[in-house]
Length: 97
Image (cartoon, one colour):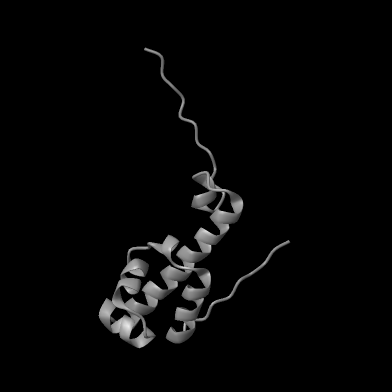
């Protein structure tokens, strides 16, 4: 029996790009995920339930559930950045040309 070789491909640092999303969509999806992760960390640090986080951010609880489950395709970058501002979570974008 002939042994097959395992082929390993180095990732691009953006899982969405590696999954075949177009570059512009992959960039937005990655930013959404990173911002959602920052909000989840804020919730954990503040020891908030989803209902408590929703009340503090003045949004409905299902929106917080989407963030908690990383369903970020339903949320705009603008919306997520706005939630970070309400939570006191700093958001910065570093551009490289």
